[in-house]
Length: 341
Image 1 (cartoon, rainbow, N blue to C red):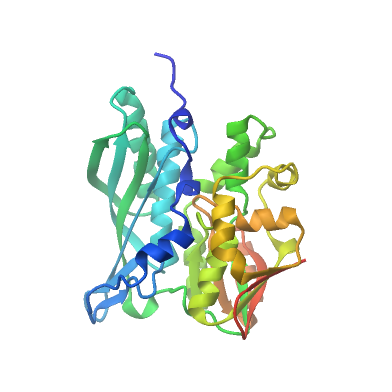
Image 2: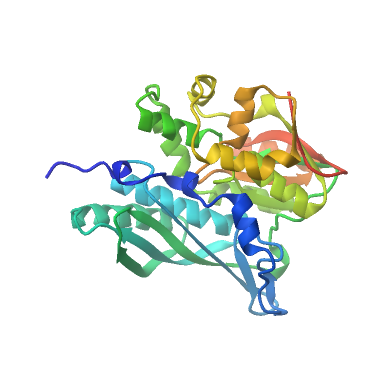
């Protein structure tokens, strides 16, 4: 049987398929979990995962994430989807423990394709130090895959979005532009090698980066996914009660993404992210760098706010361990997000 391109069955792939953040805020407005002293992180405010304290030494981190295919290779799709879900636990300062598959798949497709999706996911779960222990599968005309993940963290070592402080420096641990590159691949306009670089980034777990940050006690952490850098920076700023200033020229970008942005390549998530974050963003950057900032990312890097005086030592640590990190801005007193040229 001829291979069936998975992306031909999806209307939108990866985190670009996320429900619009502005609409999600409206849906969740007023929905507050039942009062529970041990619920350390829930919906008020929402974060990358829920955190529930078991005792003075242990808390559970729980998250769920799934989406339609963004690449045609089933094994790669499974690996990316698993990485994206696992990274939520790392963004909370935790370590994944157990994962369950969430799978929707057309019965008309070969079962070998589903097996390859699961194999790709299992490899990433193992690399994260966790176990893929089961899951649930339904029939659907559009394939979808992801994970529900349980991890652990010390109750006093949770990394929230809401802790950034004036005087902090901002760091990002992956290059931007996955949405633009994937859209260009679907359109047949992606330059040679661009997709390979994007896939390499999307299957990279944030485990090593989180381990490197841990000794530096970050004030706020989130992972950059479907709402784009500016959408997640807005969440960090608004929940921390601070002003986030980002240097547009310092934004790290995947190979080919800037050129594609100049050519006008955008995803369907771009206007939705602008609707959500745009009213809170002051920008003096050019339209290309703005597009990079609003581009929805899949399995993106960690956006981290920590005291500026620790920045040089942190950058030296990342360099010595062969890890990527870019200082992209700072945190000030005030409100909103600034993207400055």
